Image (cartoon, rainbow, N blue to C red):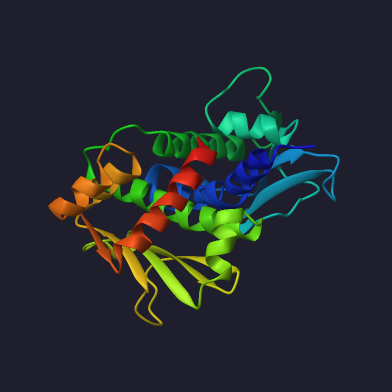
Length: 268
């Protein structure tokens, strides 16, 4: 039996964090150049006797740099695979606790070395971005970091809802059709949102354009966003100073902020 928080964390890694590999490989020119030459199936998995296929996995089908992400799906014969002995080992690995007990089996390394190398470099970039303790100075990296955090948080909250997380499920169950958004002024490319209604949720990337979001957690700059996302700035002080703008009632900002902290706590 797995502890509930281990199950929550594994779902966040499989369905919210790992999909960021596509974002990073698309946005970082040096990585994009490597994947442009690759056609392969890459998979990250964790063995589990209770899983229908004996393991849980997320895999990527890459065709000359074009990515297709498959969540909660095991590919029987991937070209490259990182296979963890269980979800606890995988969770620990992605939280930075790397050692003999948490290292995955690395399959396809020799036969598909170029794909393995590109995958590993992208995973390391993901780790650098999500494990950062201070904001980078260059705007390009700031943009990518904020985008990854917004996507991770919106998807993570939705995934926890789908798993029946008590507080989040209660929030979505009691809610009418509402959209909660994350945004930075003058940077629509980093926007993300989560739509909830009667217990259901869906995370989305980009600006929600069908209607005005019910609530938007908006920042005046990328650096201000990273101050909150990296916990180097105080939310109350940032709001007073105008670095953080709550387009909607502040009580909804506090609620959304609590769920952001829950996702962050499970992923670290």
